[in-house]
Length: 273
Image (cartoon, rainbow, N blue to C red; front, side):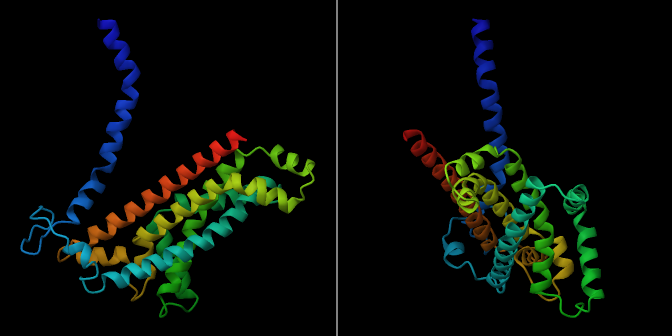
């Protein structure tokens, strides 16, 4: 009997621990989702659930300036993600597929922004903008440049890890079947690399959207969503902030689940052939 119990525990311990860790990780998300339905209009304790209401979801822009700051953050994150993903993917192909002088040095400089504290990077960029005569023009464009710079390293690392595990013989096989280089790239290489590119883009978007330190130093009078939340926290965070957090979490979850389902569907189709 003891042996059976030990075997059962041994078989189920890892999955049980994994489930507990996931529950622990997602507790803050559950709290944010719950508080998005909280009617705290008559209480000074905003994070004590008072009563259920749909008003926060029906009027997400009720706090003055919140939706404008959200629009700025989403705009910066989208543009920074697109630019950083394109440049980072090209740099990853260059680093993995080619040998050239300074390759090792380039690898070092790519990893440096990831290892540099944000306060150092933010103040350095601010000094650069001021030295370039942009001290009085800090705003959307300086935020965008800063976000592209620090997102670029994460994109390169993510896409590069995908490329490193890619078998180059697949491209050679495609060209043996009379495909030219462009056809081999778009029909073989890119579909295999695309999951890594998508993961890098999602990572870049999330990093850009929620950045505060670098943005705060280089924003001028422009207010992003994290800066709005920080400012609102001095008086009391409105419950609509939880609505935005819940919506972003659900959108991210839908993208990840949709990508996984699409990958499994393609795998089944290939297996059926």
